Length: 326
Ligand code: AVJ
Image 1 (cartoon, rainbow, N blue to C red):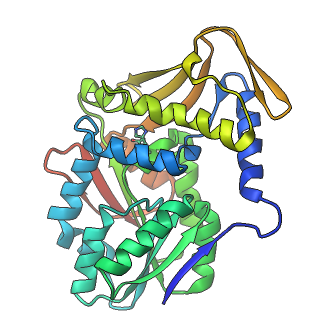
Image 2: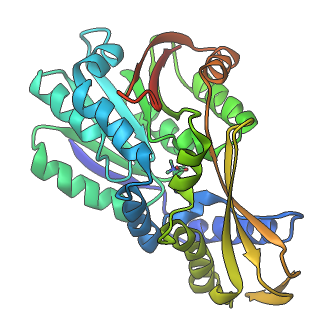
Image 3: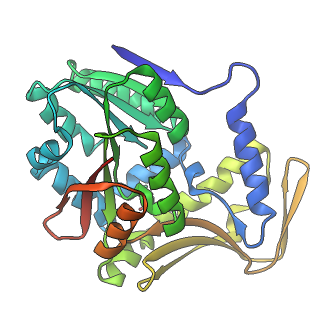
């Protein structure tokens, strides 16, 4: 079975409608806010690839270390029984790390279907093609859309045991309260025996963390500013990118690493027929990349109702992949 499903409406364009509504709501709020989930258009996908290749962005190498060098341990944590299961990856992207696990499972003859979920249809078709070539025996059903919508779709496609991958510290894009709600929602959408594997970026030397998001070449700045370009293109807005500057913070106490765009002057931006006013030095809250302590991870697990199965850290102990069970 090799399928590619998506949530595009054939009549009207529900995706743009949701984007427009979120952007207008966020930019008329105080403080102004945009959602980092919209970073990933075609250019955003490409800039994120550049970020993952930066020496400062240690997260990629840490989780790659786990998937490359501790594959058998990972496989043991997610495959409890003999029955075939569905391996669902939230925000699969290019599946650079999970491909090591996929290859291992295929080589061991373990029966499963890989279901990558991503909001970027562009990156999903690239992934689908790549995996067909590299692992021709792999069953793939790719699902384009929002996580929970696509999880429901996955549940409607089969009643096999589900294992959900949520890698790369994607969970860091939620604040602690949102992460608790998200994990509790995951828990209530799963059934007994289902498992989740979540990648958490751990607290560490604050310089190391800040450097990963405040890179000297301004790649992360471009990543943020690209959302304004996307709004200009898709919502016919007139943001002047020269008049906004990226600003990054890390609070080592709370573990919140946050990015903002600062308006460099008093200015008005037109988005369709809405005029948005910015004061000089006014901020747009762009992204949170939350860092975790072991205690916070335990608290998140118990609050959302999961049992622990096990966890694997990279050799530097900077990152952890935790496996939980309903
Ligand atoms: C894809 C959410 C894991 O927060 O570290 C990288 C995105 N933002 N640099 C992260 C990101 C700026 C990344 N995640």
